[in-house]
Length: 98
Image (cartoon, rainbow, N blue to C red; front, side):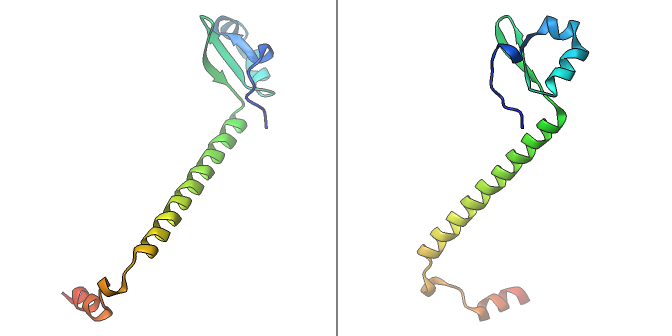
């Protein structure tokens, strides 16, 4: 996996990018390029496989976080559950028949 470390070797001006697009595209397959305009980073050019891998990692981490939050909610509900306030099976079956 390429690193997203910002240094002089992987910074390119927008005008240089336009002038040497094909060369820059090839270079971006090795390491992401940070595109500069007016001394500010305005964009990034990176290999599509690297980009797709980052999206997969983000999706995995979002799912992991969601699972963790759901697990925590379930634990809290179990701790606060009072059997005396629970609806019995007979009542549920009657509700389903209506």
